[in-house]
Amino acid sequence: MRRLFAALILLLLWTESAFADSPAVPVSWEREVGPYRLVVLVPSDPTPLPSGKQYPASGLYWADGEPEPIWTINLVTGGGHVFLTEDGQYLAQMGPWPSTGNYDELAVVFYRNGKTTKTYRVRDLVRRPALLPQSVSHYAWHDEVSFDADQRRLTVATIPGTTYVFDVTTGAIVSPGAARRMLVPVMMWTGAGLLAAGLLWVLVKRRRRA
Image 1 (cartoon, helix red, strand yellow):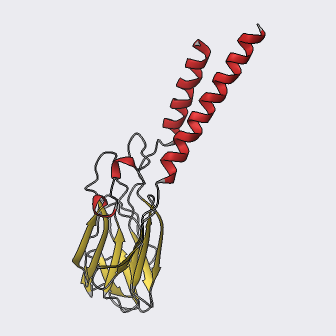
Image 2: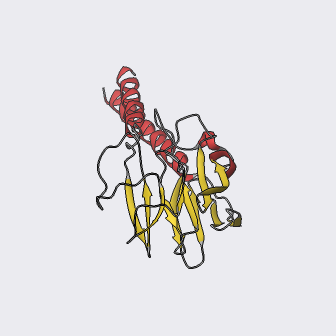
């Protein structure tokens, strides 16, 4: 039994370490979209941008013009993917890597000409966020994210299985999908249970032989 107990402890430690993580350090960046250049500046990152230009603030600029903003924006520090429409008016940003236990973290933010139009929190999009796969410091709530520039639609698939389609021009949900069972935690704990049962069966079989 002591060997079984030790094996279970090692299994739990391995499961916890497998989900240990640390957030990426935010960095400044720039990206060209059509005739525009989207610039995101992080004050703590002194690294020069590839273009070599000095920009006064995060925002949208003409790609071949002077560094004077068309509009400025206060993006979520450490946020995820950023999507900009080709006309340079509408922008969507995925929220930062959420901290374990905090389900009021930003999930998706929508902007028009640099001004916030709609904001969603994790608990707005996930019915039971406490059941999401969690590490010692962070948790994951979404799986696939895609952007249709022509239709101006952002599609986000949550880990529990609900797929949301957002209208980027308004931030409104235009097509919420039907939620499925949360497979990740179920599969994880089912696998752990099967492994524990297998270890117990081996120990019992060895004792019978002895």
